[in-house]
Length: 146
Image 1 (tube, rainbow, N blue to C red):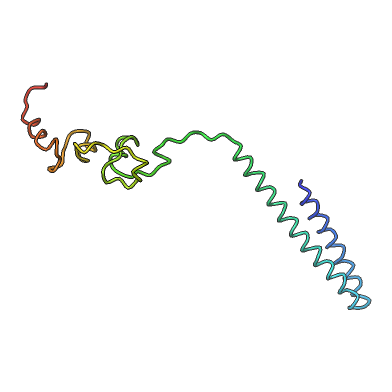
Image 2: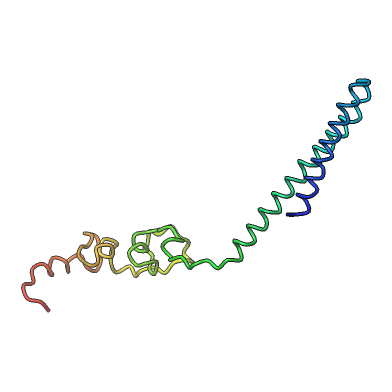
């Protein structure tokens, strides 16, 4: 129990007593009930504020407890969103030429190959690939492993 909750309960009890006193005073003369009703309204407002402060303290304590707990490490793929196909297929180690990530945050792959070769794990190449455009056709014509 926080001090705010104790204050809220005390103000709630005072509100109830003042309402009973205002009701009794109203039986004798209606004007005598007004000060009691006014005081009951003030104590009710104080009780509501104290309950709100109690809830705030509980939330702050819960947040502090959660922050104090150790968190399990998350894999890199769960933390970052993929920015290019090179990054997705290299587990975040290499970035392609059309990468949307800033240049200081990426390690580019050399310009000697194509993105299709990287994403297909070396099985296919683009027609415009500067280094491997003709090597793919030559590899298909080989009959013996080398």
